[in-house]
Length: 391
Image (cartoon, rainbow, N blue to C red; front, side):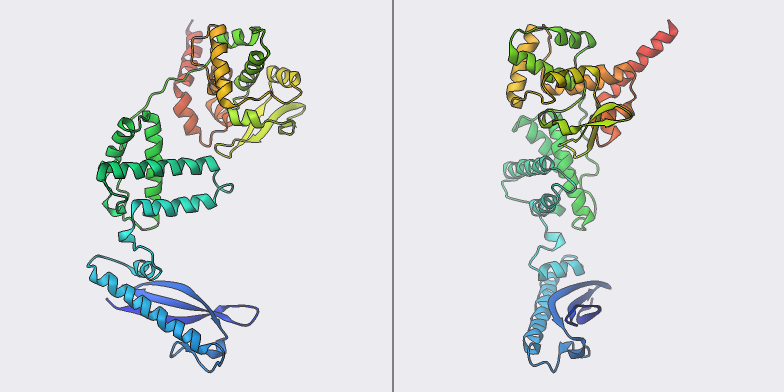
């Protein structure tokens, strides 16, 4: 198949100096790739027939030499790929010319690094930093797995099979001691990277398309109405425990995660829908908008602390909750996250609030996330209401 290199100028875009950029167009197997070589020329000095600059004393020799070198490097890239006896296209030729790996030689970790570089540039635009760090964490797991399983530092993308994920799952559970839910999240992120590689034509198809996740049914731990009331009314006689209890109860009625609770300031309280006060802020994990009404209980707590909750570290907070659970005879492993679960279940769903509204108040990016976590709780609430009708 014929390979052709052509230089031309972009007359459609002339800069303030009246110069056009010089473009290179490579053609192979009826496909084209056009790119700028980074040089400019006045249209009157461009010799299209001979594809060079003519009659310009200042820069014709230098630029014409540059054009010849580019043509030579492109032909070398084409010949190199030809002798490899593997299928390649015009993009592979261009990548080889640029010193990058052709698509059929791209490695998993090589592409993962390209993917992460793009993600890093999107922090604060499309993603939050914690999301980026999760992808770095997954990359580290994959690096260790490839070394452990294959005694190699990397492997080609086109060598990936479904078995790779099955072996990775086994490794993460046995060697890294990760829970199945964490394993699923890790594999989900890796699959997203590989799907992006497919979109960018580094792979013809998704090698993991037939992979099946192992279903995890996690029990949702939350405070019942009775436990929540007991907690609210208990006098600990120790200021720090009363303060932690107040913060915890505040989150039971707002669903705020620890980071949002710690960032809460008076400017996050706004008046909406008449005289009703709402918390309005962004959720750090997903960068989604949170809009939560302040109920009477939460107003009382904020007033008690002059609209600024007493904050300790997340670790100390959870440590104090262990004391609180013991003193109030709540037989549950109390952590801050249980406040968010209590808000979704005891405060909202079990009081008849719809799954759509619950999802919105929790700041979930998709209602499917809410359904996955709380679908069973919602079903229990529906059954409870039906039982009232048949009595």
